[in-house]
Picture (cartoon, rainbow over the protein chains, first blue to last red):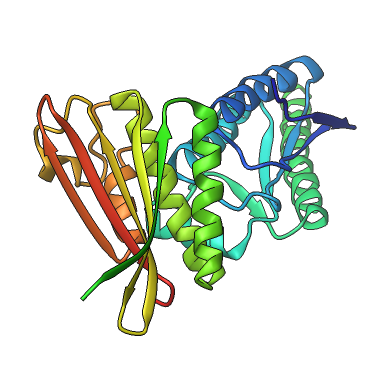
Length: 136
Length: 137
């Protein structure tokens, strides 16, 4: 049975999809990834689809699902490296992938994830200081 | 007038057949020098239709043809199954309509991706979907 490897790098999980996805593989990836987010306490998920030449409505839905599921588990998802032809097809198909963050390449995606996580940490810090102020 | 230049019939019964079919469709598209974006559109459409066939009819047959009309070459795919058929085609062609647990984009989305789209269905007998994508169109 094929499996797509999920690599851990600090607070992030990296997934590079090197084969054309078929349905079972995509469903397995969805389950594995959500499990890994939970197990490793990851703050971000980076999915590289630069080698994927077709994303149809099913795959699009899986990508959207991964993003929403991770979000509930407090992790952000960024999809990077989408081929232009795939972007054209997705929109014509009627699947704008709302709620999924995207970046052009791995590096930009990593920066986007870092900035998103810093933001949420800053918010948490602010709450902390406000609380301190009130107790004083 | 549209002429059929070559014909290839592929049985679709299990998931591995789908991978094989997609490879054959891609080969055919490359052979007639279809551009990359149109290849992607055709393959995505093929992927949607073959999934419908697997999900609702437990498989079927796909015919891959190279067609020619004047100077234009294209690929015609015919998907036929002996499944339950579609009672209301007009509803099935609407965005967001699904009897399964999907997004309901398969049929209407496919129609937007290809140049010609035809669907015939009889309840209890099966469904035949034919699509054509021209190399430049």
